Length: 194
Image (tube, rainbow, N blue to C red):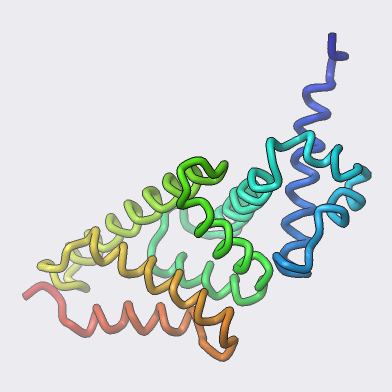
């Protein structure tokens, strides 16, 4: 029978692993970070580290979930709007390893059997829904053309953000945030409610 408090210690250790892994990926990048380094940083063997996760893929997915928690905590707004998205994209330029991790794991998670599949499906559904709501608010205020489809605009904004991350990984002179801001400004220039 487990000792009283061992569950809480396991939760605390898992949190420590995720926080440490987030830092290691941010500093070293997805390819240069090693499970051994993360394990040693939290006083575990690699096997001990993976005891807290079903697989390294689950660990990577949970690191991204932790990144989202940190981003939401740092964000001044409760919901996703274009300003919050631009802010996150701007911040991402400071943590290239996490951008690499996100791009790699999100592509792998398209497989329904991947441990991160549900996380990414839910994440996109939530962000796109919140952005679509933001578009509706902007349309009601006359700052965006009311004939635009809010869901499609939200999907396009995420496509621009994700696509710019890939371009930036290949050419760091590509400014992700500036391009997303330009996309939004272009929509606004199309005019308010006709």
